[in-house]
Image (tube, rainbow, N blue to C red; front, side):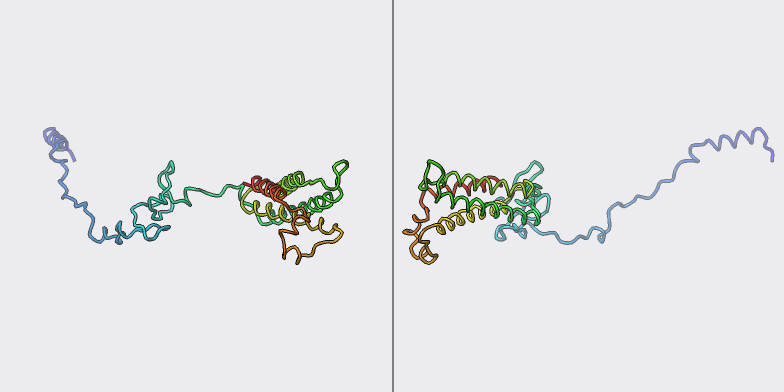
Length: 231
């Protein structure tokens, strides 16, 4: 099909006419969501929120980690906002996490060392050592030996862990060592005291077992060593 020059010129002008390519105006679009799309579950009002730790206290605060309601007494400021006491403390450090097998080893080792030192303490209290004689009280030195010996043994067996459970084990072992020392001391007496005699009149029978105020202070020192070691 052939066009004349005037016809071709008319077609080119028509093709480049901007009015021909003007976009039709689209109808306005309503961007507002429907009522069903905006329906949400009812939100608690501020008066309904109660502190998880103090149920009688209304609050408007929440922990920014666990989202539990907290009052001003429980809110703990942190670099990332307010948190409840549990979240503010964070995870327990590894040094305070002692596995059950390690605890059993610590108990066995601590009690064994306490018994050995307690026996030595009781025997030396009756034999004396060289020029000091049998009346010399070795309470201070054996208290140090008992405290440090038990604490270091438990620490090694527990792989240098710490915590309240190891503190309790250490103090219990120290007390056991002291009881063993008094039992050995009593057994080496010419006329040993019976348990009924001691419990019936402890104030008058305690001096026979060298249980005096100074001895109890030494015992408290040994317990403090074990407690401080695992703090």
